[in-house]
Image 1 (spheres, rainbow, N blue to C red):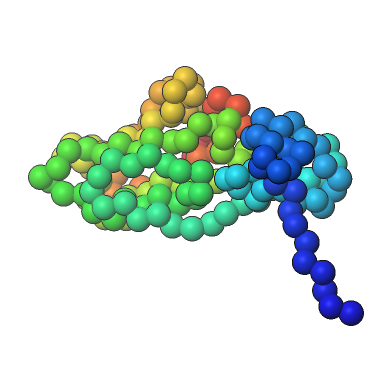
Image 2 (tube, helix red, strand yellow):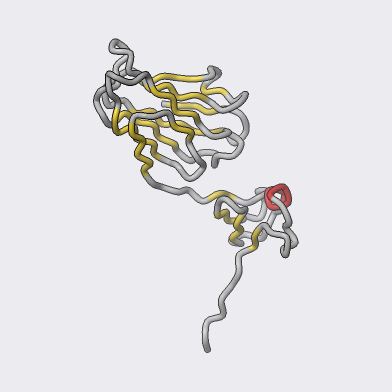
Length: 158
């Protein structure tokens, strides 16, 4: 017997889940996958919207400011020059990022230096905070910070 293709539950006008709010409110049976228009999630039978699946990947950023997108899990600054200013990396909304998924921001150049004025500032979006502050800074060569969202309004880091 030929295998029958299956469709994921998903957001869309032709679906019983017409918008992102309805997807995020839906509690499906354990193991049911769902697409919210942005990320793949799997239901556990109790979490509204399901559990977002972790992604991995490296985003190389060359000597510019960067706004982290939800697909990012590792942001690597690959060029910092003395002719440019300190760099700013802005985190996504903590409410939109998968709680518990690690998001790394790293200096891969070795040029990051608070003494030289070549820092990498990581800022929270909107009214979110990072350990109670609006931002934190990387100021040492090859420094890397690991950020975690609480799924609401706070990022912690190590």
